[in-house]
Image (cartoon, rainbow, N blue to C red; front, side, top):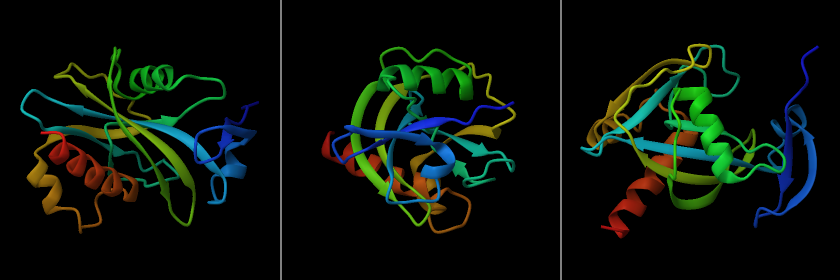
Length: 170
């Protein structure tokens, strides 16, 4: 028997209100839950994207943030990043840099997103059940495909915030 993933429903400050099964949270955008994103860059500033598997229920076959996943109940953000990076890309992410947090909402769900940055060149041992391929992209390559239907909506939102953050902090 497979046990369904449990997630914390939180308020806009990230304070836990209750814990519900993933199936009750996804599909109900009035229920906010925490996720972590990790933007992996190489030494030249290219951004690593993952192409989500066709088996994924959210944004199948779309290019997405390097790493992204739910924060488990009572789990720290740093532990969530570490766990998700190991699960998805197969390496240990130590001391990523926190960039920003924001709320991302669409007709399907609402997420309180905590975004981190990490420079890493590889090697990668990505999860072939969840990810079809990975590759580093130049920022102008990403900008050129923003209006095409190959990027996840979540990543489009993330990318615009990342560019804005980078421009403010350089």
